[in-house]
Image (cartoon, one colour):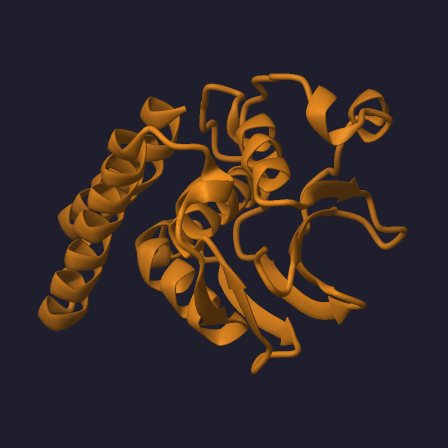
Length: 212
């Protein structure tokens, strides 16, 4: 899991370097993104070294907007590589309490990485945020081909490891969705997958608004 999760910020760093070969990058933005990626790598390794169950890690307060901005900064150059837009939809000021590093690095990062992989060039990825009873729902929506039917019928803990080529030939380990489901369950939540009638796919993580 550590190796897979750390792959996301490293891939983002490679994307930034590849883009720099094609055109000049804004120095201040590049430095801020670089620092954010290094911080994310540090968070992932620190969490792994603590060697304690996810639900025993300290919970902190965060907001939908803060989560969105962190993901936008980390994936900014990968979005740019495929001319993708990233939008925040719904309850932007919603606050909740959770293990933020795990949410950002081991759940949402994996879901957004997959959304980028399967999104057509020039399309939009959205983070939908809603409060449902005592839960917060964070849904990542893309405009790709959607999930195969056999995966839609799986329960969270039974999501299989599948490797599928991305829309620009991207490869991967196939562990992103199963890893996100693993950590969501350990934070007292779950992963929901859906193919909307209008096309694309939505993967939502449901988490308690207040961590126990």
